[in-house]
Image (cartoon, rainbow, N blue to C red; front, top):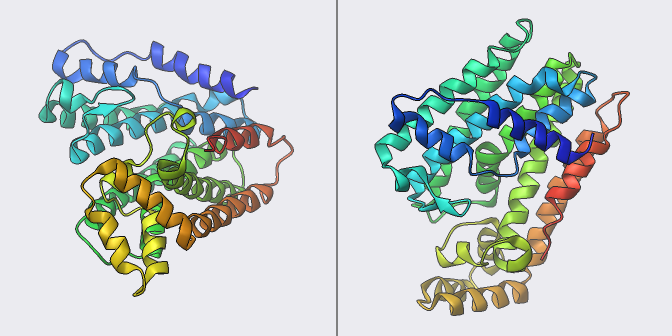
Length: 320
């Protein structure tokens, strides 16, 4: 089955999934937000994993949708915390309605995610809930770490990797392992596929950091330099900090204080290239991408892994 067909299954499910009509200020925001689109990457991974494990992907549709609802719950709440006005080109829920409505609507999505897991075959429900609960807690831990980093000046590269693992990557691992739980795969196979998802997620976030500063706006789909403009502690910045140490730290601090934002982005990009930040950050990307491929190779099934490889190529085909 082609990637587009998996995506269409999820879109069809979302279109058929209905929220109650009342109270309107609780459920209308959810209809709106779920309709904003997105890659639907996580639920597609669940369907692909179920197929890979030898089950029909339709057997995992409720679990896949639970992952998508949880992801959107986290986005609604993240947007409130980040005071983000735009999501996928349109107003965020708290901007279109208000923060109180956004909090409650997000809470409902989380409960609905649990409700969908309970619709899977009963023999799989305990393990699905156990993994889901662990993942949900980890995602919250990652978000808290990310917020804490805004107030700290001593964030390490290791801490940053740990943060993106929790905030972003464990949900990819969970989505994949859901499919292998439902297809009754061995614990070792489940672990290998989970590790594939986690390492892939870390590599994907590192690529995002790189493309934010060095990407082609037309290919990336957004203006570059947003992280630099807001002095965000991305992996690029932390690598720069490590390389600079005492010699160039004054220049790094000077760049942070530039008021002309376009000039700030331009000069930071040049400086990072000069001192080797881009190459060193790409080394991290290559490491986690390589670890992901090793974990996928270790998965022993009779089915072809072509779909997961196609998805991987899709994710990493947003080059500058």
